[in-house]
Length: 152
Image 1 (cartoon, one colour):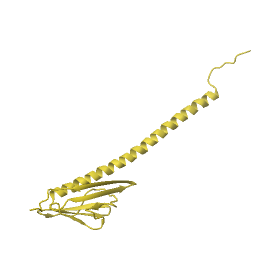
Image 2 (cartoon, rainbow, N blue to C red):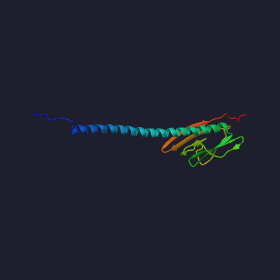
Image 3 (cartoon, rainbow, N blue to C red):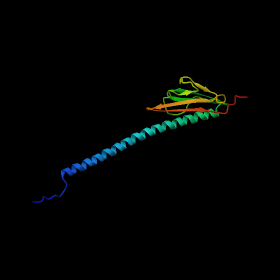
Image 4 (cartoon, rainbow, N blue to C red):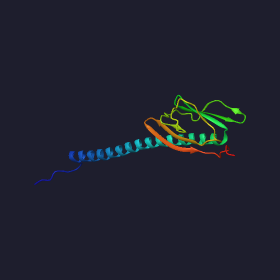
């Protein structure tokens, strides 16, 4: 029996190699896609947490340094006006970003259309801050305190 010259690769070997490469490429693409979705979700979550921390820090600072301050919500922004011994300023945004604050309560009051007037020397401020944006939400409960000077 005469042997054929077997130089080169057969069509079946080429197809098998292409199949293996496509399986590996599909697995790699799926892993990258899942990783990118997870990264986007975590970045969004971290951004909301950082913004909530900024809001709480600014409210805490106003609570400790102001005679009184007023908080109101307008056009998906949290606005604050602090009053010190020399007078009151105008309402300024606490954060330059817009969020949905639905569910936020200040001293048990959940009506966001009403201005919340706070006297730190007389009362602590109980705040439940709800931030929502792009399907992500975060809730933080805190109490802003200061040494009360209304006692004899």
